[in-house]
Amino acid sequence: YLYLKDPKLKHIFSYMLVGVLGFLIHPLFIFVLGLFFFAYLVFEPGFFTFKKLKNPFIASLGIIMINFFWLIPLVASLKYYQPDNVFLQPPGAKALIESFIKPGNIVFNLLFLSGLLCPFLLGKERDKALYRSFGLLSLACFIIAYLKFPFIGHILSNIEPVRFLIIPAVLTVILLARLLSRYFAKKAWVLAGVIIILLLMQIVICPSSNFFFSICLENEKIDHYWINKKTEELAGLIRELTDKSARILIEDSPHRFHNSNIVSLLPALTDREYIGGPYVYPKIKHHFASFSSSWDLKPTLFDSSIDNMSINKLMQYLELYNIKWAIVNSAQAKDFFKNHPDKFKPLASSDRQEIFSVEGDASYFIKGKGIIKAGLGRIDISQASKGDIIIKYHYYEPFKTEPQVEIERADYLEDPIGFIKIKNLQGHRDIQIYQ
Image (cartoon, rainbow, N blue to C red; front, side, top):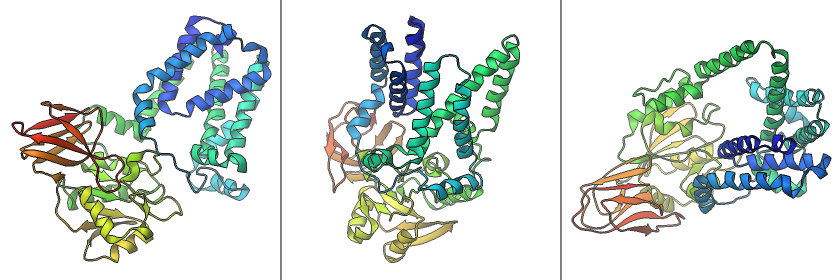
């Protein structure tokens, strides 16, 4: 917008910087950007000329190309599916009111109220085209968030409509900052002090930043004081009842883990490998290897409803993924596991979760023998047997090895990714696989 008003290179560079970061944070950033330009085009159609748009267009291509490092793997692994429900959209006036009065729903209330405040603050802007376009954008966000349109229902169900309230909320923050900067124009130090205090509060108070800094600093002990006590209890049971010889199958769910997405943190909290998580709704092929139950839908195991999964087929998958324990939370899944006591032995329970052991021997090898230690972006194999070996880790084409050996994809059952096969090992008994 600043470039269109004042075509200087500094505005193009700032647009590119914000664009790269915005697109990196969330793919829907491009969609939001398009909404703004469309809104501005409605009120200022003569503003969009080839001469003025040439540099922003080139910068936009640069934004996309810089993000190729995650875009290309994502597109290659994408698996589109149509959710049965429109998530994050209150179904009617009653649900909207209930979302306000729900205890602890402070974030939602702030988003909604700040979004309502946005048009009033826009009225104080001198640029009428900016005021109208941002106002139209905010209105569009409220329509997307709260009104259902049958003809675009398929689109809405995949973009989670209520999240678009963030846009008018952010506009409100920007507009308030502009008002404050005018008020404190001669007292810049006051405004700077307020900003520094807010940043310090974020670092000191916010649990996510504490966890982030503890990992970045490679602390041996992560500070758990902010984690729910029930979650601490579950993590403690996992460390006590399991070991690193095999993986844990965990039933991921958006609402059964103490109102948190704790499944994504369990690998860091327990130092174990999991099948399930880190998020219940990813649209990638790799999520075939998962166990989840979403809202009122029946649990899904390895891309199949638990009602349609035979015990023999399930045991084949549990062996294929080297699973020796299962953490179950939905009533249907608990009944399924309890109905096969010869295969699953109950070990303990924590709140809604029940932990079972799985019959069978633990091994990370489909073929061959050896010792495996896996970490982020690398797999270390030692004392490997001679000949071909196949390990229970997904194949990824850019993998490299040290020393150099021949690797290829090996397919088993219906897994869409395939597993790592190392061909004709002879002299090399210790191998590192890395990205």
